[in-house]
Length: 480
Image (cartoon, rainbow, N blue to C red; front, side, top):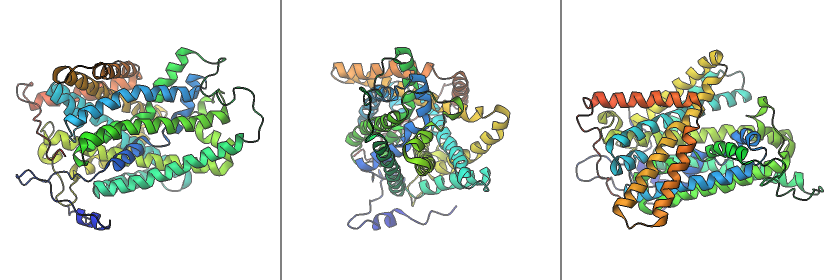
């Protein structure tokens, strides 16, 4: 396949006053990932992977489970995920590597456990573009019903792949555009909420009821809602997979990871606060849970806002699919470079664009094929295939979260002066993430267990029963 026409010199030439980076090398002639991303780029990429509109898709589920206390669950989930975000940041200072959790666990605990974490993350990062491709195709059919679902999945999978093949800086700029568009829609929604509640007499406690309603508050239902609200933050760890393409990763990965969690929590809290002012604590009918946010948007701003929110969710999932494919390519590159999976294919970089082209292409192909399989399976499972796939996203994510917290705890105990925060933060992260992980749905746990078992079996074959070294970690070049 020919090289992509727009190389890095052209990328930087489009920015007056910028200087094209010199090729990254340690003298062995190998092509390296380029350190071009700044703190702002990282935050934007993280926000697009998570989506500024993240709580909109799951709002109805949280509302029904928590009996209207959606804002409270979002904020509790934010505090919970901040522990893991801090652990990611601490480990990125030590290992600014494209492998992220895979490298942290493998280096700090054991290469075998690092391999297992990496393999579980691969399922997470492969499923996300797949699910987003399927969602975007369905959403696009609502706008252009005459175009086949299978045509749409080709369009979206192809678009995600094209965008990520252009190079990391081009991907970052496209992410900025998508993020700006989503934020504008959030502002429009909040403006509609202000107009809807202004000039109307409200009873005492109206503006505090989204946080606490004595008549419906129960600790058990609040926690049930929080376990779903955590999904709002899934994807923040994608920031750490870009460590080898970041300026000053020891500083910026920590700042970006924590900032993404905080911004997501505060923005999501504001969104669902406005939604609850409109909807209150009423339950949504079971057949309207998925479209709950769009329905209440119609109450706030009429049919125009309803259509805007629908279109925005399509765009949001396109951004998430594109960002997760970007992260998947870097994770596979990190695993390939250390020879956990075939190095000649997965550990290769395109000479001109300096992106892991093979990985981007294979993730795009899997997303397209998988989205087609979901559609074919939907008739037999009544849509259950899509739901199982979406839930299974959490299997690999929370294995990675537990592993990173454990790595951060082990590193602190063995190599640093003991502090209360150094022990308490990762320990709390382990407990919270493990509790959420064991409460995943049974089908998701089975699917994840099968995937993990397949990975362990593959590793056993490669190493003749683990008698040879499974992973060969290398020192990250140019750690900045």
